[in-house]
Length: 108
Image 1 (cartoon, rainbow, N blue to C red):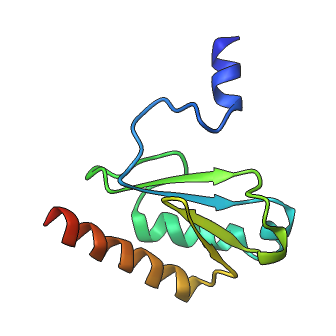
Image 2: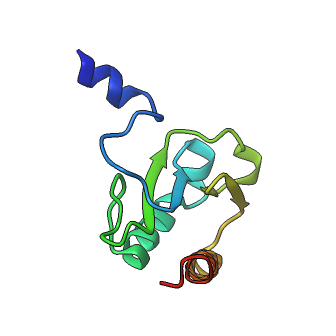
């Protein structure tokens, strides 16, 4: 029963999240607008699956049932910053910018 409750709520986690935490919306509007292909692209770029954190602790990836911005689909949230109307090319730029910010901040 405890596991059922813990897996129901988005804020409960079973492991650490990355310094750059990405949530991709998979609500109806986002799904119809291509969030499924964006998720596959994210998994390829980050070399992790949804629900995982990379080995360096930099990126973690989560699928959200709905972020609540359906008119701006598809949408991703990165460290509480929202990106709307995301395309695969824009996704690559977003990931690159957060990698660069992390390198500047941590010198990694």
